Amino acid sequence: MINSELKTRDLSVVWHPCTQMKDHEWLPLIPIKSGRGVYLEDYDGKRYLDAISSWWVNLFGHCNPAISRAIEQQLDRLEHVILAGFTHEPVVTLSERLVSITPAGLDRCFYADNGSSAVEVALKMSFHYWLNQNQPEKNRFITLSNSYHGETLGALAVGNVELYKETYKPLLMETLVAPSPDCYHREAGEDWESHTRKRFEDMLALLAQQHDRIAAVVVEPLVQCAGSMRMYHPVYLSLLRQACDRYQVHLIADEIAVGFGRSGTLFACEQAGITPDFMCLSKGLTGGYLPLAVTLTTDRVYQAFYDDYTRLNAFLHSHSYTGNPLSCSAALATLDLFEKTDVLQHNSTLARHMARQVETLRDHPHVGDVRQTGMILAIEMVKDKSTLTAFDWKERRGLKVYQYGLDHGVLLRPLGNVVYFMPPYVITEDEIELMCKTAVEGIHLATR
Ligand SMILES: *Cc1c(COP(=O)(O)O)cnc(C)c1O
Image 1 (cartoon, rainbow, N blue to C red):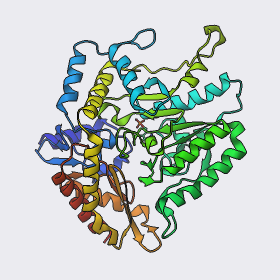
Image 2 (image 1 turned 135 degrees about the horizontal axis):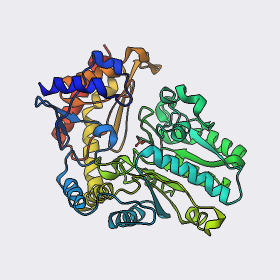
Image 3 (image 1 turned 120 degrees about the horizontal axis):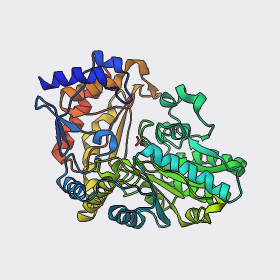
Image 4 (image 1 turned 180 degrees about the horizontal axis):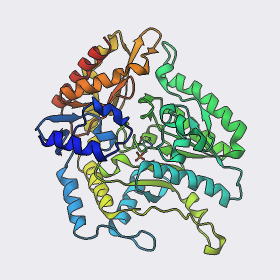
């Protein structure tokens, strides 16, 4: 009853993100009343296992008691204060802890309130650093094909997923594009590392040729999440770090999706043993509770802005809710949960369990690839397995899996023809079995 009433009211006033609203003439909108652990529950008592962590933000379950309590306590002390000229304990402690857990050398935290803004901060800071160093010609960025860095105009410009970008091209700054090291299209029998190394040659050539006008290279370490969960070998990041040093170009690591354990390590950059010049974090930062983002950078970058006011070198960028105390308290409680138990070790057990549950799909006539990096597992549905020919996007095969999932109590949200899991870390082995079984059945049905 309340379900249908809410749907009607919603559809008369709300414009939903990333949605063709006309679809809702036949595709039901789902009101959610409450959440607990990996489950979301609607007003009829129907439950949905959140296999995608509500767009990759949730780490330790919905309504996690420890995070909720931390926010409640902060709520009685201070809800918000301007962060220019003022500070507060949660933002100071959070910054100390982020500096200590991120790769060595990232020593400064600049806050924003969503991932796209954290990317904008990194782009502006990088350009501005070179400007302050008297190198204004370093004002371009290199990005990878199939990359995604958010939806605001700057972030969209350095992204490369055509579906989101094409329409807005006239509004966007030009970027240089190097081919993605994505291992899906490697040659038969080739391993990830050698494919990734080969792809790096194009990046190296681009840097060698254009470095005088390049401020930074921006990458999503190890997994291009919005770009259909395409994955590559960590060697790319090591080679890129070396080349960026050699050619005096910044390296921006966008760990907004892969940070906080998704890749198997706390941060994906660790798998290559590198420190980027900028690291963008958001999504899991607050455990999926509240909007918060941070761009970490080095002391070297910080010092290039540190000067007498009248020289006008300062980074005059801000957002109203920068460093919000409630968001910071959620982030601190999230970091406590990482400290309390060996989350990464436990996740590796869960990740292996996920892999076992979908092993049979490798032989499926319409599955072109089953790939995994840590707690991210993706299954690519194809029309022709031998040539990896994709299904026509207009057939919306992924949507069929989505609908099958909902009918069976699992929230899967395929990206085109790619079905993936990115569950909260509190998922149990039984819940993994339900999630995988539903996805496997959905894939059988959608590829018939
Ligand atoms: C989600 C995402 C962003 C954008 O974050 P928003 O908070 O949605 O603006 C940027 N980069 C990556 C890699 C992401 O996955």
